Image 1 (cartoon, protein in one colour):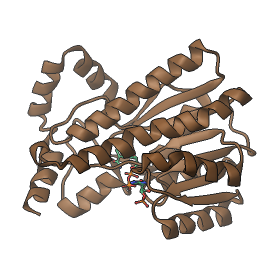
Image 2 (tube, helix red, strand yellow; image 1 turned 135 degrees about the horizontal axis):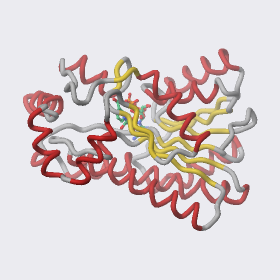
Image 3 (cartoon, helix red, strand yellow; image 1 turned 90 degrees about the horizontal axis):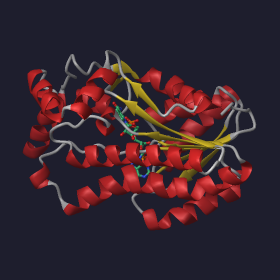
Image 4 (spheres, protein in one colour; image 1 turned 45 degrees about the vertical axis):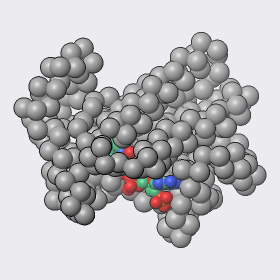
Length: 279
Ligand SMILES: NC(=O)c1ccc[n+]([C@@H]2O[C@H](COP(=O)([O-])OP(=O)(O)OC[C@H]3O[C@@H](n4cnc5c(N)ncnc54)[C@H](OP(=O)(O)O)[C@@H]3O)[C@@H](O)[C@H]2O)c1
């Protein structure tokens, strides 16, 4: 879809991390913004900066995506304030590296609610308007963890594989039923400079394996813009040859497990899970 300065994007998880970079990339193209996260003050700071620097209209919505039953009411607030939404970026997400047998039932439910159920519900709420107008795009920020498994990441892998599967199905329905709406899964690898992996490196001193090299977080904005403009199915934001590894893992999961052991792909999350166990 061609971006227009009159477009409006709803971006979740825009109070910090990569959501801010995504919001900025859209604002720099003249797109008006509705920003959503729990932290009202941080959202307002981001909104003020983007208004001052780009001149677009920016509204903020403080909401907890884990409260999925409240999402229709949240959407009603967004629609009442900004009108129709042309672009939905489901970016908010939680990470949760830990020893699975020790995860609480609440941890598992919360991860799936924020990373998978909320994006599906928001899409369900936003897409009818897009179909009516015959124009719109949904970007789901999944992860390389939505295409490749990792030890110590069961609920995160489950939620991100789910988000990739949801996006693939949505694209097929949009095409088959003639909606005129695009959808993309954007799958970052380890992103440096800001965001949850950057937090992990500073808190736990971990380093990504050379098979999964880290990428600059600045790559996320252009990846999202290109996903929208070219209606790309899946964009992997990662250096190296991730597509080859993903293809191998899909074709022969056992071979991928051997490669994972050889390059110690579990290393980052093993260290974090152990540190969290010790507390
Ligand atoms: N950073 C990476 O290396 C990396 C790699 C692969 C995929 N990803 C994915 O990229 C997306 C953004 O990650 P990030 O690294 O920027 O993470 P981050 O720095 O931890 O930021 C997460 C954002 O999501 C919001 N959020 C979290 N829980 C929420 C909830 N219950 N309700 C509403 N908002 C919530 C946070 O805002 P509040 O706390 O204010 O609510 C924040 O704005 C995520 O989906 C993540 O899985 C990141």
